[in-house]
Image (cartoon, rainbow, N blue to C red; front, side):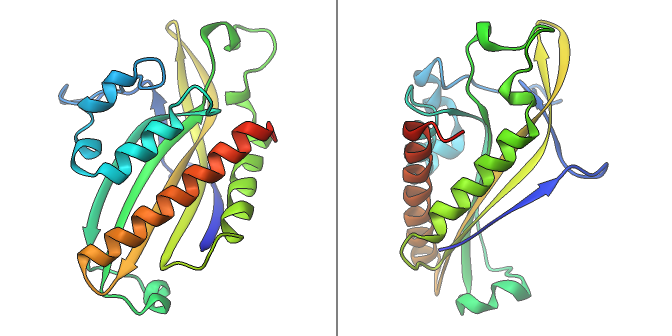
Length: 201
């Protein structure tokens, strides 16, 4: 599988507010980690079973991560770099993830939280990419982006980091692209489970 990571900490790069709220008031962060039943309220997860299973794994009690936001879509707009897949369709998704912590683990001015550790996020990205590059060859790709995050801690904003994970599957039509995307999600979920179990971070 094609896998890579990037560090995106520039002034114009995306920043996540955690928890977040849509300015329109229609959408908001759902704490699936502590309330698994909230998974049924995520429209994208209800529409795409593969994504629902992936979110379930990442938010499980055994995972070191939890999810903040996600989306999934199909497109025929492929970049020049994606011509290597000789595909006409791409099924893609992104999931924003943060390190899972209990309230008592969050920094309150004492020891920094893991969510504030750039090195921990960089290592997470590196380890995921290394594991995925050992996976079987598939018509899919994964990119892990380390970005800045503003964590709201009881009204006090803490600067930290999060990762956006992009997963894409390619094919000659939408169904085949979606199938390859689903395979990539399973491989990525297994990599997260492996890292969580081995406490590599």
